[in-house]
Amino acid sequence: MTDADSDAEAGDPEALAERVRTGELRLHELDDRVDAETAAAARRRLLEAETDADLDAVGDYGIDAAQASDANVENMVGAAQIPMGVAGPVAVAGGSADGDYYLPLATTEGALVASVNRGCSVVATAGGADARVTKSGMTRAPVFRVSGVAEAEEVVSWVGDHRERLREAAESTTSHGELLDVDTYVVGDSVFLRFVYDTKDAMGMNMATIATREAAQVVEDETPASLVALSGNLCTDKKPAAINAVEGRGRSVTADVTIPRETVEERLHTTPEAIEEANTRKNLVGSAKAGSLGFNAHAANVVAAAFLATGQDAAQVVEGSNAITTVEARQDELYASVSLASLEVGTVGGGTKLPTQSEALDVLGLRGGGDPAGDNADALAEIIAVGALAGELSLLAALASRHLSSAHEDLGR
Image 1 (spheres, rainbow, N blue to C red):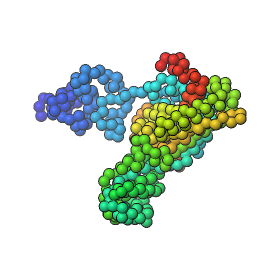
Image 2: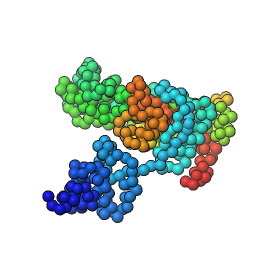
Image 3: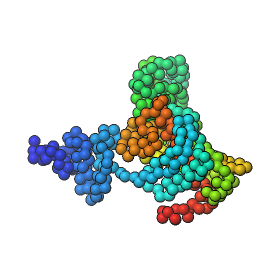
Image 4: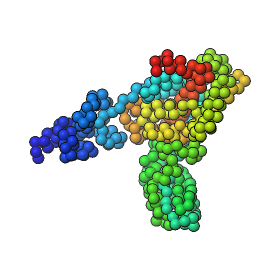
């Protein structure tokens, strides 16, 4: 071993960075040589030398580098810090959530938390919101190749007759997940099987993928089908898709509230009729004209901020924006609802184990598995839905009263 080797093996970030720079080591090989903290420091030194960037803030974090490198990120250099605020409390009467909740929101968008907080205050004044998870199921949809429609029909028929066998194969890979259904789709010589799972308190994407791989092997063994890709994009994960808006993915959840007319006028400075018209012309007509899959004002804002705060998969905000907001001016009150078709959340696994995200889940009282299993993730979905409803009400009221731009000006944004 050379002197350089000795320095590197002793954990000198500068020496390690130099060995990566000269090509003796690759970035990912650092984790095999030294502990995760030292490997991250070495990568920072390399980036600083190569780019003239100062990464002191990136290197100042409270995350367990070993845990994060093992489960959450590769080639770790540090952490990105996002300001976290809180909205609430707001009363939620859900199938799983029941009580007053503060909603942690991590965002860099000024005025967002203030807006959601205003909506939460109005909802609380009105006595709280109802929320229910109406459907639950994580999906994975492999695509198979067949010779033509005759073989496609053979595969579809076999799947219909052997769902129990597919269930046994899929569930052999997990002690928690349950296969709920397998939907079949044929396009020419392609056969798609959309597997739907109950993943309990986990968001469950990895669980569904591993289980589907086992079931797909059975399909290949017993039918003429040949697996082309374990994900055939009919799932659909992290992409806008009508199938998720219609059939759902993760949790389909709705929240609604009725607000007395005087509360609308005093707290939102507008009328139920004005908010209804703004919703109809903006969220419904405007979205339809745009060909949007989301008929809402900014539900993704709340979904994204809640996802970042609680350790969800941020890319699945795409599906989380599949939401429809409805508003009706009634004689003495305003009725408002938001229905999120495909909200993919979990309270175990993935980013929920990270320290700040775990603490945010503790604020909600939802860290870890629920009793019964799945109850905590259902509650999280219901609370996020109420937060989204609060955000919709606040923004629609700001638009109806023409206060949107002044609110941003007042907050210095």
